[in-house]
Image 1 (cartoon, rainbow, N blue to C red):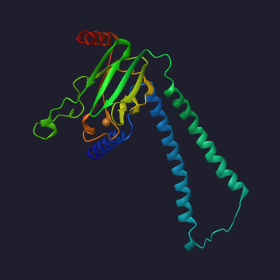
Image 2 (tube, rainbow, N blue to C red; image 1 turned 60 degrees about the horizontal axis):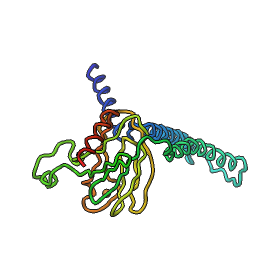
Image 3 (spheres, rainbow, N blue to C red; image 1 turned 45 degrees about the vertical axis):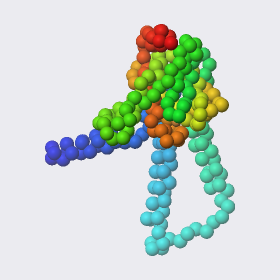
Image 4 (cartoon, helix red, strand yellow; image 1 turned 60 degrees about the vertical axis):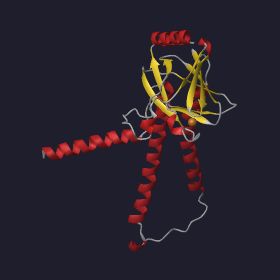
Length: 254
Ligand SMILES: [Cu+2]
């Protein structure tokens, strides 16, 4: 009995863990939490609708089948039904669109930012610029060619690490200007709930505010050439003091 219970707990535990890994990450920013909340709300609304629809369908199929002597009811243009199946979806759609619009408006609101960072996509690396501090540098994949060609061992950070990560302070509203120098790229960091197209000739404006210090990884999300998979994003969210030290070091180097 004990073994059976343990097996059940193990399966339930691993199932839970694997479901988590299939879901989108809740992330570490105010906006990523809002997006995750919205995603789960819409998900559960869909589950609810699915349950109602499939229960009714199965009930009709099983208990009202022809072999039991049931016949289809031939009716057309039922005003009551038409009103119900128009009104109910409208109410559900408004219930989803209202919070979604609120969040979209907030995502676009870049006012009162503490810091601006310009992100430029290149074939095949990223350029980061802090215009207020006159600091800019390139961020390249730091894995070796040998690793790429399977001639050297790889670790779990393979294709994630860069030589110079993007460094940002936590708890600050950071305005991000995203663009590209050659072809289209896309700056994507899942933990930030953030993905923005980097398009030559355009500057896309957005913002983020990271709550939790840490290292977050991302990648280019727009097929941009044969080394598209080799331009990762490594972002370090650090305290204001560490950020100031980083900026000072960068200014001294250039
Ligand atoms: Cu790219």
